[in-house]
Length: 164
Image (cartoon, rainbow, N blue to C red; front, top):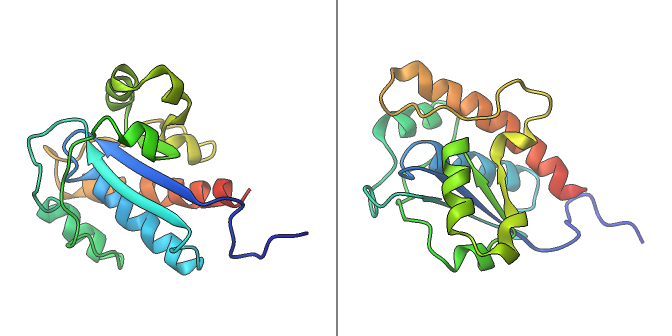
């Protein structure tokens, strides 16, 4: 029996992770949510984002990230930062880090039986040379556009992978 075009084989959950959860990971959450809605899969995939650090817990995404995202039709305003917690490793099917540093932090926190869930987001970006989404926090506005470019590319690859 073939599955319908807008169905996934199994219910899925994805957690996007960066350092503070105010720039890169909420951008990834917003973009991927939008891709899922366009594909008719929003009700089949649970999406969240978190940071490995606790500095910004409860805060909205960075204003520059919100503006850059809004310029492409993504609304990050409802999102609030939170820190990765121990039950995330059990609760999510995929935990996608924005860079090597956060990947290593996640691996050091994660119980051995869940290590297979942790990957880099850009593992889904095809043959792109870059493996890391650079942190735009201390840079200029162009950094936020670059984050969106990388995240959109990886989101398309992730959606294809989830569809099998």
